[in-house]
Image 1 (cartoon, helix red, strand yellow):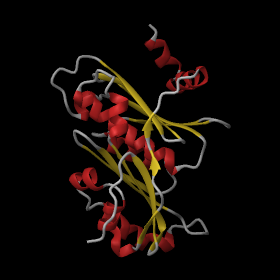
Image 2 (tube, one colour; image 1 turned 60 degrees about the vertical axis):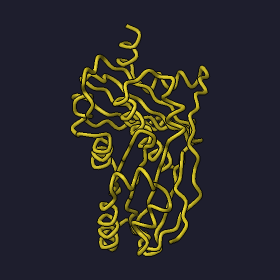
Image 3 (cartoon, helix red, strand yellow; image 1 turned 30 degrees about the horizontal axis):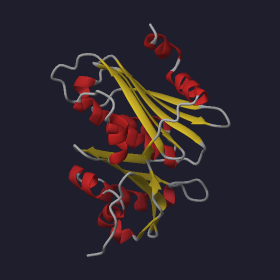
Image 4 (spheres, helix red, strand yellow; image 1 turned 90 degrees about the horizontal axis):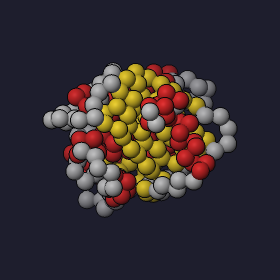
Length: 258
């Protein structure tokens, strides 16, 4: 058996020599999300959703090449009225949520009602970009994939899994050929998508990293790059606080201080 690492608190990128028209990423978080959430008195179901949202934010932050923050915010009419996660280009994460009495609710559909998800790219230099999609899905994973389907020009798919100690994710993204066309790469993409879809929640939570990539895609000759470390960090300077408030939007800020 090949001895390959299982990442912890890291994002890692991969390419496949026999499927060069796609990129892959894994994320696995444990101690970093514990450090981030332990001081917040969240019910366990909300902590789990928050951890998954942070994992998705980490993947999106390191899918792009920019210096700044990636922010994903969910605003809902359900018991969890707001949830926001942030990952900086340096790998610092933070997240919080607002909720009413959740009673016995545990699932995404019970906790999150109708609303929207906003994905914000907030570079240190340059203009902010924000994409907004309605919440019409049954999980954080579904919401992110709905965003990809609505907003991304490149075919992109994300899988997420979490348990009591870990949250992990796998992303695949199609890369167009040099002429900008997808036609010559359809077969490779279909193969990659089919293999990725075989991953189980248990595999993803326990093996995210090079070991998982080798198990799923070994026939495509995957190559891994160095992991990028993720950590909880709250450097709440006046400037960063101002940027976070701007990212929430005027209406949300008014509700916070009402």
